[in-house]
Length: 120
DNA sequence: CAGGTGACCTTAA
DNA sequence: GTTAAGGCCACCT
Image 1: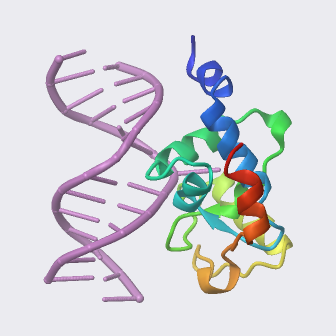
Image 2: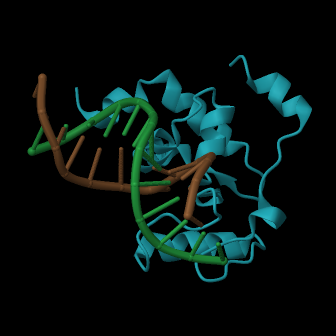
């Protein structure tokens, strides 16, 4: 079985995708935080892989995921890098030198969301 | 089986 | 404020 099918069949990837869809417009979340909320602590790299291989049909807000320092983790200057910045700016997020201010824009899930989403 | 890789993270200088 | 090293885990060669 190829990589994409093994991922799309993975309940772990599904949890990651579900968390990403919860990030509100105008906010961002780190790969590590998404992993934590999905019940997969310490697996930030798995989040990046799940996003890269997610099917188009999911239309995930992948642009709201940045690294823990607030920096765009895509290859500098690449088309997809530029697109992430454009999408964030369309939502009112200031991006300067390929980075967002995490103090201002980091998503802080409320208690209700956590209670609803931990069991899956 | 043994490395190499990556849209990462934390810690320690 | 920064970088470097070690850790991390799934996948690929």
